[in-house]
Length: 258
Image 1 (cartoon, rainbow, N blue to C red):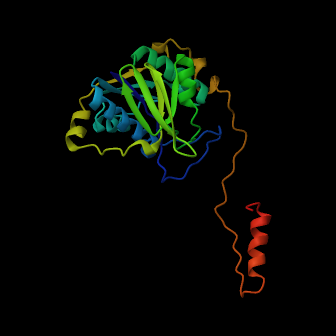
Image 2: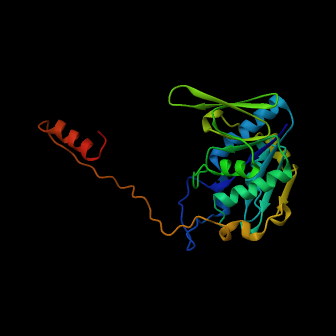
Image 3: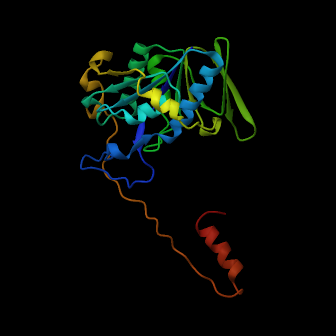
């Protein structure tokens, strides 16, 4: 079985986020980490490999090739990695990202493609469905459990009461919830072996895509303005018992909580 895990580098959740003059998120390579949701995706890919054999391939895209986090993913156990690195990717929106990933997946080949439920930098959660649409394949989304039975993938997805079970034939795309597993830590042996594992670099031209099919040139989304969310909280201290219950009721009512 050929399992491709789509991984994204995102800014560390511990650093302050800033927008540049072009209204895009400023990304510093030294602050980049594996998108936290994708760690569960990598783990699920490795578990599928342990049950069914085959290989796990990490796929990522970036304006410029970076390797540290890709090597970390391979240190967890992935067999090899493919990075689509091209300056024209800068400013890609979700639609362009799905187009590029779909083209790369068609070139790589796969039985199953795994995505995380979202990304820490935007958390749109739409790239799996866009990629599946470009591939003209089914998407099983937000899986809390994933099993493969012959040529059929079966997922469980949390519902308001219990869960929903959905299945589809391979090949297909699956997005997984962070509740699906607990990611492993890279071992020292894995870290050392990751340095020797294959890492292939592809450009847009390699995928048969023109520069204007990705990046800001192809973006349908445009940020016009942004402002920081205030973390200041208003507080009110009510002294005494007289009228306290009514004040609480009025507060909840005014804020449309009740």
